Image 1 (tube, rainbow, N blue to C red):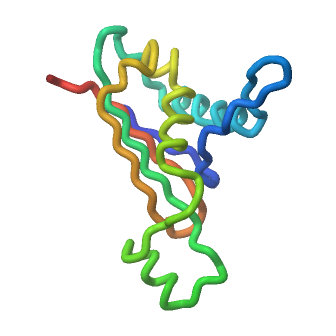
Image 2 (image 1 turned 135 degrees about the vertical axis):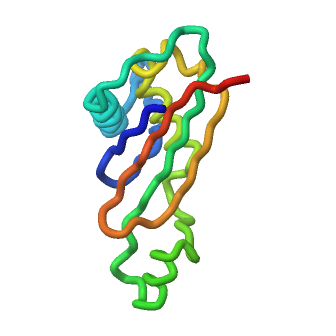
Length: 135
């Protein structure tokens, strides 16, 4: 199993932009580079081409400072969950796209996916786990 974290507020995949041709916005590209860098720092290698893999992404958001002390406590105990943007599927998409050619040859190899959104203690971050799926 491969596991690594990307620190900073979780981001979702931005919609494609068009200016004569489709392109990816700079914030999405920058976050994909952060994910790639964290994977490379983990020192792990690519899964073989025909091997199915699973990807789990746990997203931790900062608790808003405007929340009351009681509400912050509920967030810390996971009794209140973040119902906010970015959507979980867009976070999963940016992670899977960023790991193309690094963790696996292509994200078509991803057969199992898990996404969770929670509040973290201090700063926002994502934790990514990748494993070989055994049939």
